[in-house]
Length: 301
Image 1 (cartoon, rainbow, N blue to C red):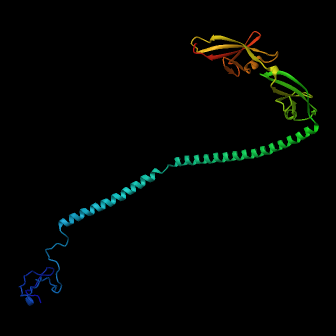
Image 2: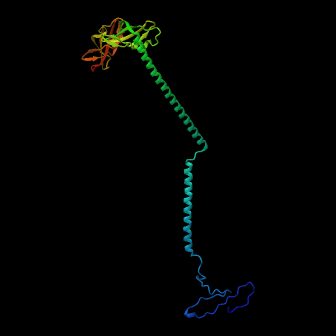
Image 3: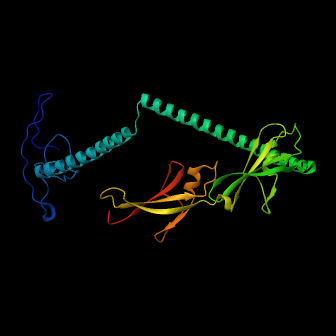
C-alpha cells in the first residue's frame, strides 16, 4: 500500500518522497513513517534518529579515566605484592655452596656432640670402675687392719730428736713385728698409734728403710727444751733517711746445737714496746749468734 511508488533499477533503493501529513486519529498526532520498502509501522521507535547510541563525550571521558586509575591501582598492588614477596623470599635464599657449608657445619657439630657424649659415657664408666676399685681398696684396708691387729704391731726404741720449731720437738720410733713380705708397710706405720705424753697419736710421717727399719716420726708440741726466746733489745735507729721506719734488733736465746737456726728464729715470738709479734720480720746469723729484726713505723724517721 505504498503511495507514490515508482519503478527502480535493480540494486538501487527507492527514492524518498515525503508523505502527506494526516490528521491525528482521535485528536492525537501519529509518528511519521518512512517508506523503506518494509512495513515498520507496527514497531514503535523508542529513540530519535539524531540521538547518539552511546553516552555523551564528557561522560565517556570521565568514566574511562576512572577505569584507567582503577586498573593502574590494581596492577600496581599486584606488582608491588609480587616484588615484595620475591624480595622477602630471596632474603632467605641461600646459594648451593652456602647450603653445603652450613650442612658441613651441622655434620661437624653432630660429630663433635657424638664424640663428647661418648667421652662422657667413658668417664662415667671409668668413675664406676674407680668407685668399685675404691670400695675394694677400703675393704682390703679393713682386712689388713684386722690382720695387723692380730699380728700385734708395736713401737719400740722411742727417742727424742731435734727441735723442728718453737717449743716443738720431733720423736721417732721403730715399728716391730712387721713381716718381711708385708706389702703395705707404710700404711701400717701411719695407722699404728703410740702413747706420747699420755696421748695416743699416729705418726706425723713414716720412713721405710728396709727390713726391721720401718720408722715413725711425731712432732710433739709443748717441749720446753725447744723454747727459744729473744733478749737484748736494741734500737738500731732509722732504717733509712726519710724511710718512715725504725729498726729494732734482739738476740735469740736457747738455740740447741743441731737445730735449724732459721726455722727456730722464724717461729719464735717476741714482745717489746707494748707490742707482741709471732715472729721477727727478718732473721740473720752473725757469727755464732742468731738475731731477729723488726722494722716498725716511726714518724721521726
